[in-house]
Length: 308
Image (cartoon, rainbow, N blue to C red; front, top):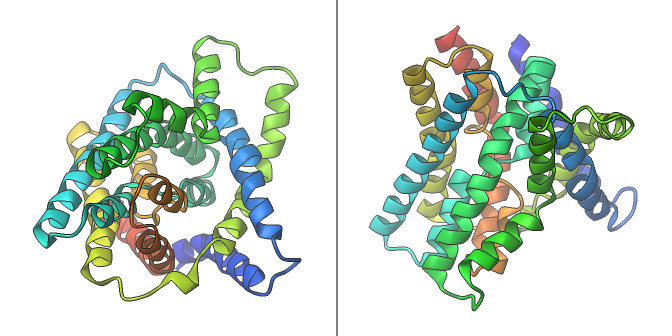
């Protein structure tokens, strides 16, 4: 019950954001503006702040990356196999794939901060630094290969996707300056720290405001298979890999968060851009976000019960 109470404010903020958008408060278009502010300014500030202080001397960092990349690879392989067995179209298959391997970075970091404090937030930022570029490169390559609807060279398309993503740029800057020993930077680090403190509450409200309830329809087996990849296969691989590599305690709990949160809202934009099933993708995002109100507290409770 104490764990559930600790998590509940995160999801209540998402529900409040959805209600505010439904009531068009404070005015039409406001939450779309907040969404852009969070994506282009506040969240990059948070990721820069946390990645710029990661301790590279920690011998567990490499194993931590292996855990998350292994979960990504196994989940992707299983979902693509299930899509092939169902004989679904390639656009639907890539939307299933996005729903399974993408994760909502905003909710992940909010949960890490709420449950595990500043140290948990650093582990979450490290996981984001590993997974965000990896997931984006993997999905662009896979979607272009399966759809073949772009005339641009693959390397150019990947570079464009990475360079225009402010989260990846912030992570690269934070890690790069940290590796060079140039952080903290006077004034700049203080400013990004202040911005990061405003990020998580606004981010959760914006996530709720962005939920597309009108897109829900009969999505059938494709939704349940992608949800199985997101909420069952990914976290299971994380737990097995943590056990095999000897990762325990806080690091294992934070790694698990990446496999139990809903898929990223940005999946809709990529599906639309690269020929995926965008309408089905929007339904996947909405349904997973709704499911996570139950699955996240349950998964964390079970993990704490099993792992101690």
